[in-house]
Length: 246
Ligand SMILES: NC(=O)c1ccc[n+]([C@@H]2O[C@H](COP(=O)([O-])OP(=O)(O)OC[C@H]3O[C@@H](n4cnc5c(N)ncnc54)[C@H](O)[C@@H]3O)[C@@H](O)[C@H]2O)c1
Image (cartoon, rainbow, N blue to C red):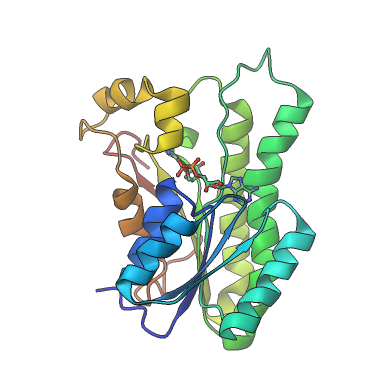
């Protein structure tokens, strides 16, 4: 299912967590992988090699235009094509509005929203030439329910949803679809470290009383980046155990 043989997938923020699970799933689907991250991705690369697929990595801060342009050139040099882009890199520091500084606001906007824009700017021209592309952007289910201490984060992820809707319109004629995934609370190392209490409190509000697993998110990204998603674009799918209902 979701066969991606012969396709090349770029995934950002794949050193760990949801991004790592996405890379593993897309490789299992048959795609060759290019990882953009600021951290060491050797663990993720090893997972790809186990599937028999090819993987390349280049250090890339997705909020730097210089870095994202260089990354797109790197992908073309290595693979000569790019069919799938998953904008997963993101940060979610928790801070109240009263304590939030403008620097903190800018930092979250710069990684979560500027980073998504810049990667699309770098990769979409390649997809346009190929007349094929599948883009999946990571938003958050926090956009759809009451959540505290995340004003900059929720604003940035609403921006990702807006970017997804607007870009979908602009690239549709070149057979490129753009959709977003909004995960609910998901059991990653960063969540365990920074917000472990949410892993038990939030699932109580869901229909399915457990936190998401990174694999749950990877399964939906596998679908969003498949050939099956040829007529659905500009959408945001919520994958949160059935709390938010759109
Ligand atoms: N975990 C959750 O509960 C949850 C819920 C909703 C949405 N999300 C979203 O899913 C995505 C992944 O979340 P996660 O929990 O796996 O995060 P994580 O902290 O486990 O991993 C984030 C990855 O992004 C990389 N990264 C950070 N800044 C970067 C930059 N400037 N350039 C390139 N790479 C960068 C990190 O090195 C890391 O590999 C994020 O966009 C997050 O907002 C997560």
